Structures are given as structure tokens and as C-alpha cells.
Amino acid sequence: MAWNESGGGDKDPWGNRGEQGPPDLDEAIRKLQGQLSGLFGGGKGSTGGGGRGISAGTISLLLIVLAGLYVFSGVYQVDEQERGVVFRFGKLMDEEVTPGLHWNPPLIDQVQLVNVTQVQSHSHQASMLTEDENIVDISLTVQWVIASAADYLINVRDPKKSLDQATESALRHVAGSATMDQVITDGREAIAIEVQERLRSYLKTYGTGIDITKVNIDRSAPPVQVQDAFNDVQKAKEDQQKFINQATAYSQQIVPEARGKAQRQLEEAQAYRDRVIARSEGEAERFEKLLNEYSLAKRVTRDRLYIDALENVFKNASKVMVDVEGGNNMMYLPLDKLTQQSGSNASNVDITNLRREMEQLRRDVGSSRSSSNNRTRSN
Image (tube, rainbow, N blue to C red; front, side, top):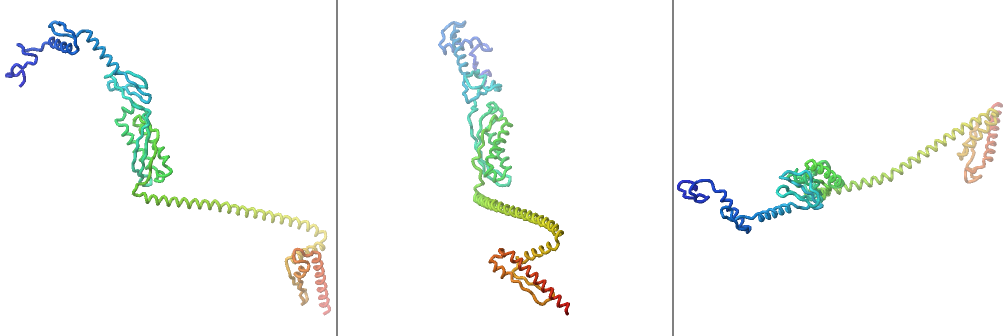
């Protein structure tokens, strides 16, 4: 039941008064002063109604102490590796607080300190689908620092979560554009660099205030379920490379030899051509000179040519059969016997004796031919 309802009795909170009305404000102030005076040990004095009050010196001292506490609570220090971000009534101030001793009014400004030099690490592991439709397990470590303390605190609600999601996106994009061999073997360094550049671009676009310093791929391998099959494939590739190296070494050995032989044959053919041309030119020149001599002495030149031709022919023959015209006798000239008498080597045959024999043979042939003609006439 409310105090002012009928039947509620005398329940006036301002005291039992004879008349209804608002409370006495002066009396309330006097009661408050009395309580404060008793709390701080103030002197007694009459204030119109005879109550206790607080002296002016006590109030001044109290105000000075409160002001000192307020000023002292606003002093703070920013370390060398930190930057301060000031919020005034929740609104961001324009400049970041540099290292040193600073003061900001408490309850008005709020300062948050952020370490901008500490290198922090973020580990990420995931299974990726490569360009050649293979699955690989990749684990990497992202090293990062805070480049802008204000952006780190304001632009993104959870910068570390954004970093994790951006890492996942950059890694999937790069791994999906590469083959399995590139991700696992010789392309790991290039993939790490590309992930770093792409991740840095993502975080800059988001305005997270994070700068990526290094991306290291700790492990990249096929899933455990297919590890044995992958090892067999790698062994086959190593054998393939070994055979290719052997074939390359053989080709590097045999090709220069073949080229050398081909070059030698070309040079021999060139020399043979030059020799034949020179001999032909010499024969032509000799024939021209011989023609001049033949025009001066035809018989002598003709006999000389005949003898030289026989000499060239008999030089390579061991036996010569001579058929006498008009007769039944055939002459046999044992050149091999003559050669053996002169020496064992055919190249050492005495040319003078051979010519003498040829002249004698010619005279015999001529005499045989004359006698045959005489017999024919007599008949």
C-alpha cells in the first residue's frame, strides 16, 4: 500500500508534518553539511539553524588533492617500441603519440598503446588443390608487424582473424595456379614470394594496418594416404632424369666425333677436288705444249707418245701377248721374268733396258710384217 493512500497511516518520508507540501531544502542542505563535517572532522559552527558545517580551508584542500590526483592520473609514458592512439570522447585524434612522457586529461581522453616493432608470427596449414588436380598439404608461417596502430585498432574488428582469412585466400590462389611439382619441389620459394605479395596487397586493401615481412613455407607434401604412391612417382621421375642425363652425355660424346669425321671427309673431298682440278689443268697445259712440239716434229713426237703409252701399260702388266698380223705365230713377252731379273720390286725396273727391249720388239714386228708381205706378193 502506498504511503499516501487512504488507510496507509502516517508514512510521509519527509517527516511527520502537520501539513502536506514539498520538503524543506534548507534543512536537507544542513543535514548534508553536518554529515560531511563529521566525516572530515570539521569544526562546529552555527549556520542559522545551529547545525555543524565544513570550513572553507578544508574544502579548498580537498579540491587541491582531487585536482592533483586528476592531473597525476593523466600522466603516462610511451616506450620506444610503442605508439599511442588517443580517443577523445570515443573519437580518434589525428596524430599518433610518439615515444616519451605525455599527459592527457583522464575521463576525456583514452589512450591505447600498441607495439609496432615486435615481429609476430602466424602459422597456417591447409590442403590445397593444384592446377593439375592434385591435393597437397601446405603449412606456412607468416611474419608480420603493425605498420599503423590507428588502422590496426579501428578499421578491422579482429585483425588477426582477417590475417588468417587473407592468408587462406592468397595461398589457395597461388597453389591453385601451380602444379604439384612446383609446390613440392623447386617452386616453393617462388610460391612463398607470390603469397607474400598477394597477402600484403589484401591487407592493404582491408586497411588492417598490418605489414607482412616474410612468408616461409615450412612443409609441402602430398597427403599421407597417397605418400607411398607419390614416392614411387618421384623415383620414376628420378630414373627418367638419370636416363636423360646418360643419353645427353652419350650424344655429347658421339656428336662431336661424327662432326669431326664429317669435317674430315669434307676436307678430303676438297683436297681430292683440288688435286683433280690441278692434274687436269696440268694435263691440259702439257697437251698444249705437246701439240706445239707435234706440229714441229710429227714423227718423232708420235713415236715418243707411242713408247710412253706402252711403258705405262706394261708397267702394270706381268704378261703381254702380241699377235703378228698375217701370221699364225703369237709372241709371248714374259715381263714378270724380266722384272725379277732386274729386281724383286716392280717399281725398280730399269726403264732404259725396257725401252731397248721395246725397240727390239718393234723391229722384230716390222721385219715379220715385211717378210709376210713379200711372201704374199710372190704367191
